[in-house]
Length: 454
Image 1 (cartoon, rainbow, N blue to C red):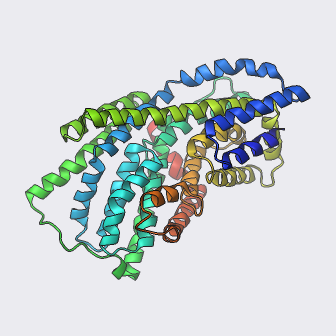
Image 2 (cartoon, helix red, strand yellow; image 1 turned 180 degrees about the vertical axis):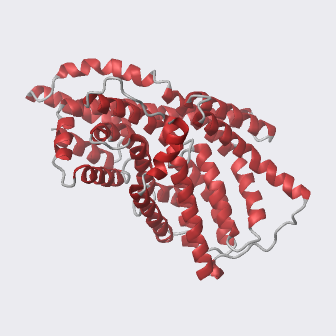
Image 3 (cartoon, rainbow, N blue to C red; image 1 turned 45 degrees about the vertical axis):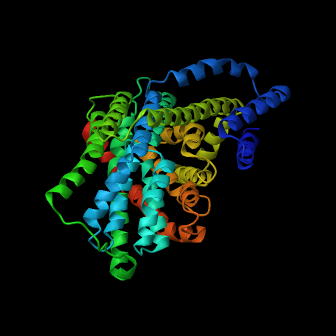
């Protein structure tokens, strides 16, 4: 019954029904069938109100609407657009400099918004027409924008890492209790933020190195922008004015979390207020835009929490049907032990990334598999970052990657689907290479959190 429940949910999702309602509806149907056939104890549903209250009352999850608000303000106020213009004028005089500007601004935008779709759409609208007009290769341009957009999965402060941090904290405590440790340690959102810094910067460096190799081999596809401005004081002040505010905001948010000055929720409130102040100073925010920002934030936050409620119902019914025991037995009998079980989980999450967003996977799949993997001895911070990188790769992989659909949606007139698919493949290979590197040297993830938090 547990296997049938999981397959039924995947099937209904592929038919196009809303994720949150699918998770809850199909689970309750299987609970009714299980009650009638004697395979499910209906009294388990009695704990559902307490579980849902715990979800809504979770202080860490209060950071989600605040981070979303910060990202939407930075997007609507055109701060990223001004930054891209300044960076393009600064680096565009060098061959391929426009692409490096896209990487840099995309990284800042990804760190600010933490939402893959918002970053890809914004960068696609801002930079793709300019890149094509300047004579850059269409396939590479599309691949670079999609790859940069997915950096929002691992560049902190990422909403994906906030949600993963909460889920992994519960899973880690559950795993330690199963091992007989009755004063369990915890893993925090700050741990994941610190663990993601080195892999995120390493991935961006690998993107830049790949681009430099292409510039060396095919210089004609990476022209320099000829009509550049002179480097005078006016230009320097304009560049600093575009660059310093978002960098300062990210430093305040991320630094306050990493150094223990503020909780993620407190830091998110600082980020939301700071983004609003920056937008007002730049005169890029009025009452109408503020209303749009608040409506957009409410919609995204409502979606996250509705999915979380549906996932809680699914998880409860799945466990009641014996799904957790089934996963335990599968992992314990897996050839290769911990390595085999981890590889299986990564492959499953990668494939599910084609049909589910990171929110559903975080709330549905991770709570089922993480406690077992952590019981087997896996490091929780390493597992969290590997899941984030894995999902980032999945969202970029043809033909079902979400990032590809986002870019295609805003560039139908400019580029074909085939060019997008061709352009992202090298970046997918780079991300798979990063996962291999992180598997061989897990210290790239665990070193910084151990230095900061001991």
